[in-house]
Length: 410
Image (cartoon, rainbow, N blue to C red):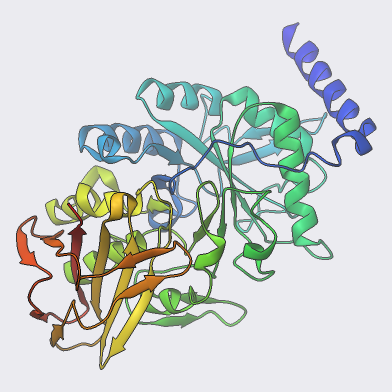
């Protein structure tokens, strides 16, 4: 007898939300205080696509804990597309009873018991990209359902959205989440088509800047009606966007492909550059059976610290010489991260004179002045001290790899 009562109560709340239209019209604002550093976690799509069930998700949560990934900062377990069953007679969504027989609430409780958080997926359109029920017309019901399940993170996609206005659609789901009352991180996934960086800061906590990534370092895969992009192609698409990122509002160049088939050097470069970009670190591999090398990359705490730095500034490309790009990222306390990326398929030699010129970043108002102050260098992939900025750096960088340092001001 309780179930119909709960549904009727929720339906009443939905009706009330619509009736108060003008009252919440000014409340299209996300929950503040969330994602103050780029979110870290895991998502099911890159490895499993639609082949997911509650057993896999539970096992992944267990592996995230036992491997040390949770302690390294990966706290969100995000279920992507294809978890959906059907809507009931009142319009409320339910999980696929075959794939998730225990229901999402029980799965959320299990994930929370592990000291982790749970994310879910939906779509602004009538159907998800995988053909499941979308949230169009059911935004408030879905938000109430997610809150009732204990969801912490919502990835909101953009398939089957004919005639919809992107900003308006994402404002609607934000208003619905606010009305439901549970603080939920909103990941806007409309692929950068409508320049969300220009309007999404008050609405979402992160927004996709590109189409989908796939596990190739320097490739573009043409599917006819859409394209998937390799690491370097996506990296190039971030040009000019860093001014839009900051605490609680991040550019999202899509999820990580570390551990999904690229060689170790390319995985390392991929991870390093996402950390320099202050990008969300959402792993997309199978943590239940990853190699030692993959785990070492994903849990390198000093590289992660660059990504999670409390200053909240996205890095920038400072210079390009031949195949090598020099990237800089100002850090809290006067430190800097410096990453040399070799885009070529052959090794490259570099020489970098730290004292040649003072580097000033107008966005952060931070200065790297090695003429007047000597910085100590630490190689973040070897963990070894590497001298100081008193002498020019001379090094060789393998093909499709990086050399990454932290410059300490103290």
